[in-house]
Image (spheres, each protein chain N blue to C red):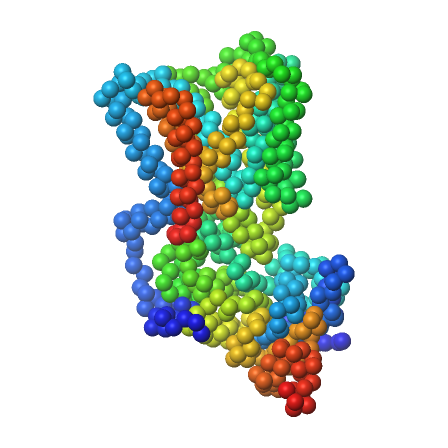
Length: 260
Length: 362
């Protein structure tokens, strides 16, 4: 494949992941465009989670290529992806509940003096600023409040605020809506559209097709470790996506034959 | 879909507004003194040190008042008692509590603490006897750190729960101290391993306080600065609280846990010197009680058994509370078994209390 460097942000080519004799991902290739919202869909066990972990550098791939803005990345680990600006918000595990909001926002990226001591006051102030401006989160009294005292939606929003504050260029959200109330979900989805206008690409990993269809520019459907569908929003329908997610390649064929 | 009762509330998450727009909706109002104080109080409470601090303070007042009213029956405020209890036994347990507490925050335990303490004290005494205490001190600290790091490596590399790994290693090092020293006590003799300077440094009696208290103040302050103000200390909280989240933000849990074990070892080494110098001897296999007392001090002080929560001030108060209750029972001439009874009860109540606190932490 040849591509001009600037028409996509991230391209992965033929990603394969094996756990021992078990192949979880088989030759998966796709692009994520700049300022694009991509939906990564599939049933449980389709390989979504593994793919997300590979994209974010937490888990190494067995083989395959990882291209960022046209440049091939030889070693893909968390340090590299963090420098590239990939921020992943894992379901339930983005924040440390026993730590304050401010400590969570600056976790691993503390503002310190040259001896490594944290400038706590400055961190608290900036965190308050982030809560007030980057995402408006209702019902939070102080940035020193513990994350354990927040609702699912508020915690989710804090995680996103952190990603935005540290100038991520690619935001990966793993099942962000599964723990949210209806209103919080709507707000989150509209917020993803907003990020797009600020030049941030995002990948929405979900098995809720309706949420994905609402906001994503493009949909990638995974089934048994393979990519079976990669389509722009205009070219597909909720029905086609449903067929692909529920019954895989067979369902997709039947949908196109009109027998689904 | 499931939540209908929240529908009349404002949206939790909304599209971002410009800073200026928000300023108009929510003008910056300066916080008053009272509000700041309340904010700070909530902060302390969230870390589990507030309630235990109040209980400690009340008990201290009660003991002091009793001592003033009936000094003969309850000589709590006597110089002898203050020097022996407050500034000798509290610092030793508090330092061990800090050691165990830091490790607990990282999500690990070390049940070989007592064995490590005994072995390192023997190392201190034997090296001091042969080469002088100038060599004994680094040898003891190196021994304690080494033992703790071996535990750390076993736990981190094999992912065996630290309970089991360190329980086994505890037996090993108890055996090792008898192997090295024989069943008789190692003695620190005047003039050879011990001199006036060493005693003044580690067990000096200065009327109302002893040098152990100075050590607690210095190390307590350092531990606080490290754990609550240094980025590496912050990483210990992160790893103990949610390892996956820490990993996702590129904190290396293996490094952080090994660091916690190393700090634990260094503190145990310091305490082994304090104990060895004060008693001038160490009988192998007699330090097992320290293990659970140290963990108890940390738990009473608000450390979470699941990791991620705790404070240095809490660990110190936890140790102080346990020793204060013991002291009160001894002064009140309670039979010996009362002490175990009460200390045991405090620990269980504190653990239950911690559990309840974790549910509604703020």
